[in-house]
Image (cartoon, rainbow, N blue to C red; front, side):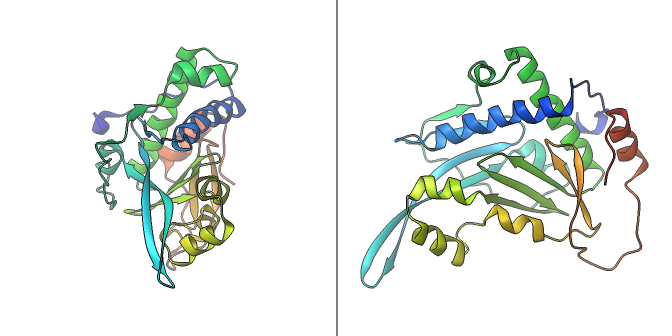
Length: 233
């Protein structure tokens, strides 16, 4: 149970965790960029799928592909996060991240990859339980940004370009706010003036949302970071 969650992290070293998650991100990206995209789930985090959309411009119907992310209930229930769950259409094939295939892209066994992913998510839950803000970065896919109870999935522009093959189309998507660029995440404010980044396990300074007295990271969070030999900047 989340209420009984205790911090118990036993990673090799941080660069290796980032490497393993890069492998996970690569698997997600590959499934989404297939000729017939599949919906792919990172168990305990959420599900991605590609939605075919269209709009009219100068009397012509323009079609495009938009990535969609639905947050896992496990994450949403930690502190009643506000995020619309978009059901995956029945015609889209659904898969979960394959640790067996992911480990082929990294120098670790399937068991180590699976353990690393779960331990990373456990610490992510731990941070959210403490009501801290966080960015979960999936390399070459996008960033899941959590500020208070607000949730935003922002996507890499290169990934959007791979989907739509047109810089003009990407500009339209971003201008109309049909998709959020991960470049905007760096400007997302936090009431703490900081966010925890995963899977890097560091703390990044961001604009402060409201004027509050400076406060240190909670003692529990600091203790958790210290146990892994990592300190916030």
